[in-house]
Structures are given as C-alpha cells and as structure tokens.
Length: 398
Image (cartoon, rainbow, N blue to C red; front, side):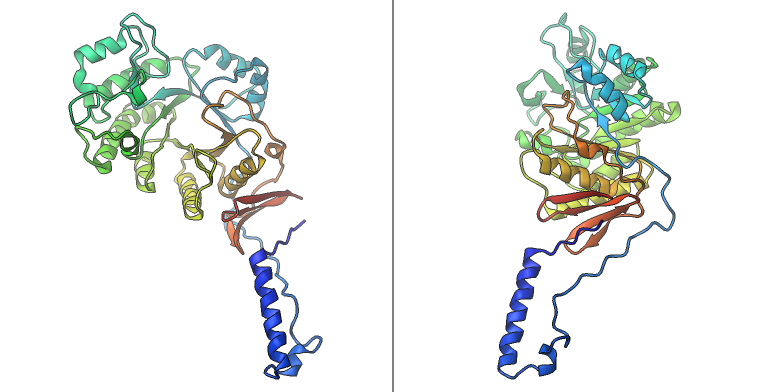
C-alpha cells in the first residue's frame, strides 16, 4: 500500500497557477491548443519514487531494538516484559537480584553497569552509606578523597569545588591522572562480578555547556577544547587499560554536544554512545529540521564505524505523535547497531509499550532518502515517512 500526500502549499500553488492560465487564455495570450481537453493542462500526478536499495545488503537484524535503563522497572510484574522485549539493559549495583531474575526469564543480551562519570557523592558523613551509582561507593570513600586528594576535584576560578545543582554530587577533574587511575581500579573491581557485561558512563559532557548553564568558570579549563581533551585522555585510559583488552564494552551518554566533533573524538575509545534527546527536545518542542538531520547523520556515521548508538526520545506517556515521530526517525537510521527508547528522564523505571513497537516491517531494503518534503525508508513489508517540518510521521506495514 502506498499513501500519496500532496501538501497544502503545493495544492494552493497549483490552484493559483490554474486560475492564472485561465485568465491569460481569456485574454488571448495562451494558445488555444493548451486549453483544449487533452491539450496538456491537467492535475499533476506524482510518479512513484523508485525504491532505494543497498549495493551490498546489510546483514539481517531486527528493525526495532530497544534499550532499558537505568534501574529495574518499578513493578516487578514488568520484569518479564523487559526480558522479552529489550535487547540492551543498563542497571546499577544493588540491582543484582533483578539482573538474575531477568536472566532466568530468558534475557540473553548484555547488561551494562551504570556509573556516573563526572562526579562522586558526598553522603554527608564519613560513616554514611553512599549511592552505588558512582565510584566512591563505600562508607568513608568521599571523606578519604576530599581530605587526602583535594587536587582531584574540579574547581571553579576561585579554587572552590563545584557541587551539582547544590546536591550531594561533587565534580571531579577528568584530566587528573591520579583520579583516572583511581576510577579505573574501582571499575576493575566492579567488573570482576561476572554478571556485568561492561560499563555505561553517564554525563560524559561534550562541552562546557553544563557549567555555562550554572554560570561557573573552571580553574583548569578555559574552553570546550581543553575540557574535551581532558575527557579524551580519561576515556583513553579506561579503554586501552581495561575495556579493549578484556573485550568488555564501554558506553557513554554524551550530553551538551555543540557539534559532532566531540562525539566522534570520544567514540575512538567507546563501543557505544547514547543520544538522550533524539528527534525532540527535553521539554515539549521538537528539533529544527537542520538539527534533526544532523542527528540522523550522526547516528548513521556512528554505526558505519562499527559502534552502537542508543537513541532516546523524551516525551510523555500519552503523546502518541511524539512517540511515533521518535520511533519513525529511529527506523530511518537503524543499521542493526541502534537501540531506541521513548520515555522521559523522570519515568525511566516505568514500562511504556505501544502497538507500534511490535510492527513487523521486515528488513530495510536501503537507506533513507528524500521524497518531496519528507524522508522515506523502504522495508520488505512496508515503509516509513517522516516530515521534519510538520513533526509528523507514518509507519506503514503492508
């Protein structure tokens, strides 16, 4: 089945053109033969766009692949659905019981350990128990760091350490070699648990944008390039000293991207990365067409390098248009190394599942391509259309 859609703009222009031709003909300025029946004036018909195909077909893969993060679902009854429908899981220490249950329910994919990259937790007391989502995970760890290694912390231009939005999280200096070594030793200890397949690092920032939003200037890093180089050195240390030799994957969430350069510089020392605001923004709006196309290009190039990408569209559970738009955009670019999720950052423990997630499109026949004002991709059993100007989409299963 093929749906033909003519934009209102095109219909209006065609109508105006027809009226103009008729007016000119009445004045004798258009040859009579043009206006005779069959003489050439007719409603325009759009020829079917030829299906684009790959010169070399991609290996077979599931067109719809989903990722779950960062904690188990808040309802134990949803564990079986997660095990059955998600192919990548990211969990945190203390989730080992649910991790085992997911395996028992038939989940066979990787389970990555979540860790904060940018900060450690001050639990407000040397005997207080910290959260397990960061490397200062033992009682007394933060006190030891702050008292014995104050130079490992990230300072502002006044020489003071920086807290994350006045919370318990305190930023660390990604370029400090001793801090990098401490972090690596902690990771090695965590990963000795065979239940973990690898690590997912959160908040590996692509620029100084986070600190700019806090109106904070850093003591050691004057611009984005300096900060990015520090992060690259950190990732290189982790990757070359442990992850590459062990064969375990290292993923990262890379927010605050100002351009794709940092993404691909970091990707040298990663196996996969997350784009947590794919196709739509963090609030209720959508990306501009230019930014949307930039994200599609980034996703395709990432996979072409043999890396994986997690694409997350933020929204509300009832916003069906937004969900479809994110899903259809994902289908335009998935080359077998991408995972999708529709959620929002305050509902990651909720299982949102939609009928469209079970659409059987078969294998993609080729890459995306432009069709009038939209982007299209053809599959064995249907096709996908996305209009980035109107934020609309169609997922057609034939």
